[in-house]
Length: 515
Image (cartoon, rainbow, N blue to C red; front, side):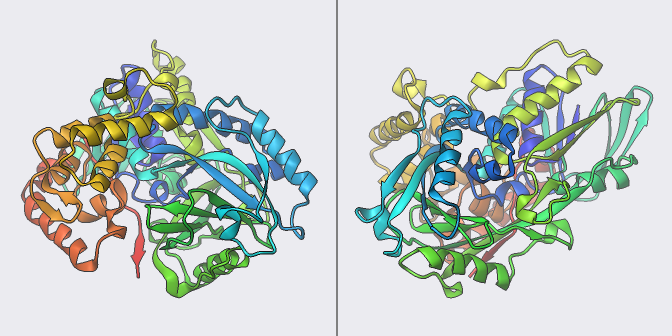
């Protein structure tokens, strides 16, 4: 099986197929999660605003996945409590209560608490808001380290026998009887020819282009490319809740605690007309996000406050919606069996990736005679099984706290903040980093052992791969420190770049702007 596209859907499908005993090759033209999949709002959520568009099936499916994913990777996914201040000029109270009732009951919950009405006149949650907001609605969703979620799916796929090639392009794919004959091009221009029983097009925003230009198949769907941009500012408040802010244009803006010292604000929904890989936030989007946050928060947000920004292009199924924010976030899988099977993924969102991958593998089962069935619902992602450290799992949200404490006790020579970060980034695989010591620090908080681990096991090939995807340390380092990491990576990884391209595990990069 050849899977083209190393975003969340491609990595998830490769993992599912490999776990069913199939021989899988995953090809990504850049780095894993380099584009859309690392440019999300970093939430595992049902999508409460989609209820307004009557997308009950999508919301139910996404709600059901929240706790499945939380149990599979408690180190990189955690519960998030959100507060929506009531703005009388927007949606009325009765509408909010009906929506939250549906959100609570469309799918079963065991870990995440239900919604409630809260008084914003007292306590730290209301203190961060302007005094005119007196009532709010609290509900639960999840937060995820999106790029690491992609990486861990690829790691799991590789450990189940898949081969992962990053920075390799699929430049030509043609049916030849019952097989696909495919030409791949490597980072140095080298060529590789492979045969595959099935081709999975999980190229995200490039899906239609891939069909036309490389698979020589007419694209059957129309994608609407919508740019979503985010800004990051210094921490705006001290509690751990996020805010859901209603804007006059009926969009929703999230304000989320991020990386301890920062606040993440997003997203926009803007039609993207240029090259897919060159999405950038513009001044208008920055001003819009600052304005919407400042309408609610006691502390105003200005463009001068922005320390980091990123933008990605979402490949949404065209449904003729007049407003980009109203375009469906659901997905569709098209299986073409006129010859060797071709499966194309249209649309999708981070929260439903596992279910999408399961459905994709199920579709390929009959034409390819796959005997193994679905397996991922109860499986851990790498690092998610904490039982060896804390015994039988209880609740994923408390299990990770107990695990972090256990790591700190075992490695009491490490700074507490470093120990906590490593525990949450690597989960139960943290011992692979710590068993022989971390080695020399390259910059504060980043040591040689971690860089070697990311290179050898998670396909990191550049400083950007490390600082902005596999970790978010780029936010915490100075320009000089980021340059020091880049110099270390160039010095130590330059000579084995060609060999690394063929390594059985490989990773990704987002478009970022640092101010």
